[in-house]
Length: 357
Image 1 (tube, rainbow, N blue to C red):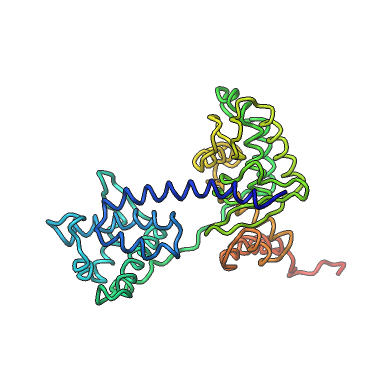
Image 2 (cartoon, helix red, strand yellow):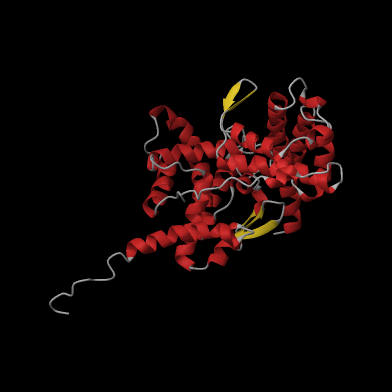
C-alpha cells in the first residue's frame, strides 16, 4: 500500500475539520473582547484548532461572568486589557464557585470538577500570554490552585459482556421490534465498529477519520491520525480483519455508496459517519448488554487497554498502542488490573492448616 496516498486521503478529512473549527472560532470572536484575537493568534503555533475553539467557549463564559459580577454596566465587547488587569485571584476563585450553578443564555448549567479545571486552565493561559507580553503587570490567575480532581472509576466491559455486545450487534437481540429493519441495514457496519474499538483501542476521532484506503489487509494494519496530528500505524487481529472485510464487501455491493467517497464508515445518508452517531450506536447496544454501566466509545477503549495489560503485563506497550504521551495515564488500566489481582489472591493465604498438611 502507498502510505503517501493514504496520508493525503486522511489529511483531507482533518483539514476539512480544521477549517470548520476555524470558521466557528471566527464566529465566536465577535462574542469576545477584541484582545482575545491577539491571544488566539499568539498560541496558534502550539495548539490545535480544537483547543482554540474550546478556549473560545470557555472564555465566552468567563467574560460573561465578569460583566455580570464585576464590570456591571459594561458589555463583553467593551472589556479591555486594563479591565483584565483589574481581575484578581479572588475574582477567579469566585468564577470557579459560580460555575457550580450558573445561567448562560437562558440555560441553567453546572460544571463538574474537571470542567472547572479546564476553564481555569484556559483563563490561566490567557493571563500568562498577556503577562509574558508585558501587556498586564500581574498574572493573578496563576495564584489560583487547580481544583482537586478525584480519580474516576474505570468502567469497562467484562469478558462475557464483550462477547455479548458483539453478538447483540450481529443478531439484534434485545432491540425494539420497530428497530429490526434499520438494524438489518446497519448490523455489519455496527459490528465492524464495535470490533475495531474492542480489538484495537482506537479513539472515536481516529475511527471516524478512517478512509477505505486506511486498511491494509496484507499485514493487518491501518493508519490513524493521533491527537495533535501525529500519524501512527496500528495493527489488528484476524477477528478484527474479518469484521472489516465483511463491511467493505457490503459497501462494494451497495450501489448507493457515492463513487469516490473516501470515508470508511458511512451513515445511513451515505456520508462519513459522525462522532455523535458512533456514540449513539455504542450506547444502544451497551444498554442491552450492561444496563447498569454507562458505556461509551472511550469505555470500550478502556476495556481494550485493560485486556491488553492483562495479557502482556507491559504498561509501556499499552501506552504506546493507545497513543498515550504520558504513561501515568495508562496506569489507570493497571489500577483496574490490580483490583482483579487482589480479588484473585483473596484466598491464597490460609490461616488454618488442613489436617493432611
